Length: 221
Picture 1 (tube, helix red, strand yellow):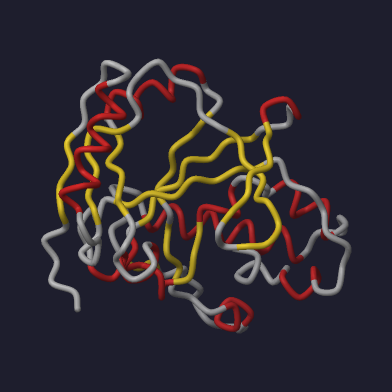
Picture 2: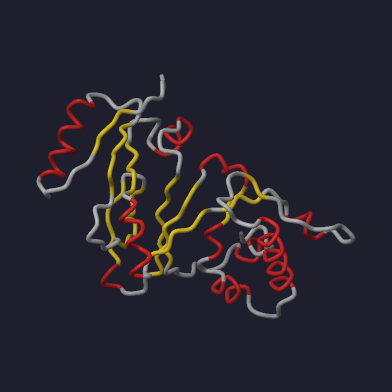
């Protein structure tokens, strides 16, 4: 989003500014080979399927919000071209979103931002939540949704080790009385899944909860 609004260059070589936005990504593509490759260490991870009751419960407390990611297929150069009818192009499933209306709103935002006398950091702060809802069209295959939490309370923020980085990651957790997941898909390259599946079901049954465990149907060598 910042690239499209011509703001990314203004952020280069600047001091890091903290954000209160936390993101959890999801997709409607449950057993998709491209996502297994990209996000589960080449198919040795797992896919967790959210319980619909859990997702509905998020709307009641108002702390978490679920959004559909929009994939933009328009270059910033096109928006800067004078004398040309401008239109934002999108790619992928828009889930009922009015493309024409959204295009007009983004163009108005582009003009407002680029004609504004406000400090760039102030503009970006105003776009804090919205800017995480757009990605380049090259990622449209992901069909991504994002759970977004704006959390400022230090007691709800934790630092935990991650196998992706030497430095701990910063997290916040979603509180809900509803079971979060109904099913677990194990990746196409998971070994000894007949040992892993019983352990997952045991962990849930010890909390008086049920969950289905399946193996991916994708052939992946």
